[in-house]
Image (cartoon, rainbow, N blue to C red; front, side, top):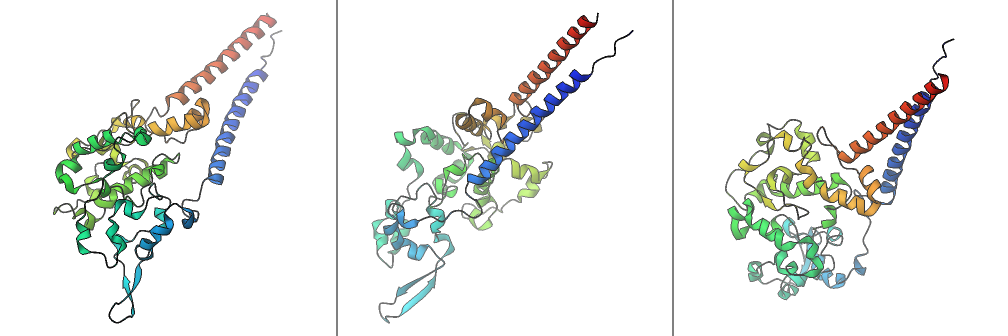
Length: 341
């Protein structure tokens, strides 16, 4: 009599695999839900108690005019209250300033004390503006950001080489609204959007673009017509991944290269040694490991998948699971055969 094969162990192994997949999915979903629950709503940011922020009371002398679209003053001759429109380029929203990195500064920390008088003296428009390195250079508190290296990279970039002193840090980073936390967030989409909007602030705005050059602003869609799935690339990859030289020690590249040196090869990103792992994903993976530990940081990362070899760690874990499963099935089959022989 030939014994019938016992297929129950195979079903048992399959159930174990399904259970593992289910637990993995639930863990990721649970963590995602926690992120949504405890992270502030980006579309409806929490109201800031402005008065509790350092120097807010003094800064209100500036915000009462520069914080809205119109301002009022008394005409010294007629004694009448005059209402005027505020120029859009000098309007600073309180809600943006008080969630920025410079929220505890006094306006006069960067601007002349003479701005305390109204009307402002016309010659103040000519005052020199401090750059990042003027305050942060040599400061041990901010050493981890390596401002000196950033300054060196920027000076070598096409922005600095073509525009010289006219192109300063503030052309890209508004000192009144700049938030470095938007670049180090675990939400990769937010990081990509934030960085790309910095580029589009000039390259997508003809009025700002022509402040630096008389050349016609290029049509970005037409210039990138060689790129397949444009919309997907524009929303999932930062401009600087292709248009900047990667600096391994810097969080964000500042050496913008000439357009003829920009990355145009698909395999640069869609390959095992993707340039994205050395730039866009590098900080996020490191941050996830620090916050969640090695296992969760690697497995539950929200890093987007790029190319045929997206995540070597997940591949390794998959091979281990498959290998162990095959090993268990082989040993079990061998023992069953030994028992029935």
